[in-house]
Every structure is written in structure tokens, then in C-alpha cells.
Image 1 (cartoon, rainbow, N blue to C red):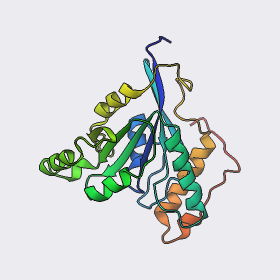
Image 2 (image 1 turned 90 degrees about the vertical axis):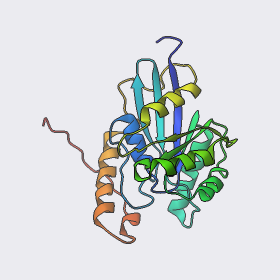
Image 3 (image 1 turned 60 degrees about the horizontal axis):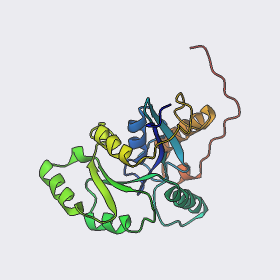
Length: 222
């Protein structure tokens, strides 16, 4: 490994349902985080690893930022707080149609020493003239290193975002094997994929009280 190799942790933050999990999956090129229309789908930090010959980016998909009202939300808020403290780069993700003043207030509540990049997601839903106005609004904000327009679902704008991230990553050896996509065991993903289906097929409060425990996992040749 040459001294030019870069490695670092890039943590993704934002409100529930802005597309954090979809963005990480798109950046890594694999479905790691489950995605549903319901808020609080992501409960734990999930790592996705992007490996290239000259860099390794370790993405962290975090639970949505919210004011906790019960125990599970309190533990999710702690996960977010911890992630804010150990990022080499922080991505703050908002939806393209979000009110700018609301987004600005939430952005300024973030406490992190890491370089902060604003990522505006779902830009395919708005006209170019509206997007230009949004970029003008954010231009020169003192907390931000840069602002990027992406569509995680349609995988637009991701290459430019990765190039920007690499500017701020330190040089160093990879933290994980270059063969790894995540630090989680396959059983974790099996359980989460089942929980995703519970969220998609059940309604009201039931999904939020669901947890999946894998008792037996067998891999078949096919």
C-alpha cells in the first residue's frame, strides 16, 4: 500500500426519510441498509465500505435525527451523537423540496468538528431553475465545505461527491480488508431484510415494536 492511499470514516446524517440509506447503498454499490417509506427504519449504525486501489471510504448510515420521545428513540439519538464525534467527513443530507430555513436551523444544530458537506437529495424531482435558487441560498454558509446535488435513487451526482470526500480524508492504510463490504455479519443483514418486509407489509405501530432474531442460518450451494 503506498503512502498516497487514503482511508477514513464518512458519516451520513439527516432527518428520517431523506434518503440516507439509499445514498449509502448507491455509494457502495450494494444494498446494505434496508429502505422503507416509514421513519426510523434504520435503528443502528450500518457501515458500508467503498474500496478502490488508492482509497477506502467507510460510510456510516445513521438513524434519522429527531427529538426522542421513548426509549428506542433515545438509543437511536445516542447512536447519532456518537457518530457525529468520530467522523472524518460528515454528510448532512436533506431533501430537495425541504424548506431552506428549516434545513438551515437543523444544520446549525449539528455539533461536529469534521468537514461538513451538504448533500441535497432527490434533485430529479425539481426543475433546474429551482435547484439554482437552492444552491444560491446555501452559497457561502460558514459551516459548509461544499454543497452537492444528487439523486441517490437514480445514482446521479455521486462521482463528484466522492471526489469531494476524498479531499478531506487522511492518508493511511485501510481500516478493513479490501474484500469487505461491511463490518456486520451476514446474519445481521438477514434479520434486517426480514424487518424491512415487516415494515413494508404491516401498518400503524406494529413495525416499530418488531425485532428479528436469527436462530439458524444456512447457506445453500445455489
